[in-house]
Image (tube, rainbow, N blue to C red; front, side, top):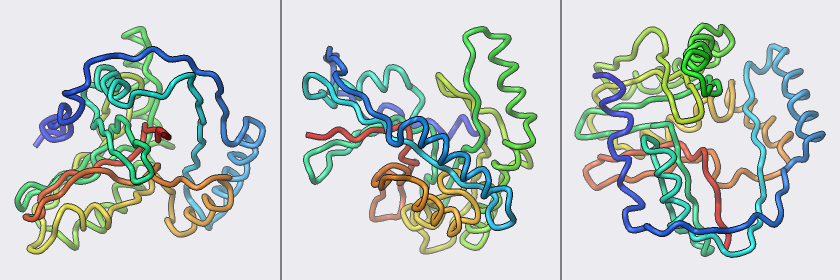
Length: 262
């Protein structure tokens, strides 16, 4: 099965009721951490990855934005869908009255009947406005030993989990180029037949977080993230999706996202 046939099938599940765009003004913008602290955090992580204890650690940064009026989450989601028509677009009301919304490019796990599929992404490069330069950027990514190594960490970790819970596990020997409107990604499509009793949520939770979200080895990277990042990731880097009583479902990685406060 080609990745195109399973990676973007339900892209219009949300936002069908939202039609009006909203005009608003950003009144404040704050990065957490600020630039100097962020660079120091990255430098510390880079130094640690040069030791035998950790191969990769994935750090993140928050942007806190204040607007002059409350954001219409429906209108914002509609705009996300228009800008990212092949992403997994989500809009999730939260218990505190806020909303989690985003446009994730990454399918963690889809299960339909006994068949499952996944399209992990690791390794990325910016798209270019010129077609020739854009293709060159993609080819450089595909040839990058650094990015290929980081992608291999992800696929090997996932393969180790899935091979014990499935049969007929299939994946190509090398990654493919996957595009979003702004980025090239390295992606490897997985598919297989789940063992009896496995369900979409259980499999997704076993796979999550992949080394693309935390690092490798996971427990070492997790500890470093807690030490280096001056905030709680909360919902960022989690999973969002659905499952039913028959064990079917679809779960994507909660990235390219925002939490809207009341």
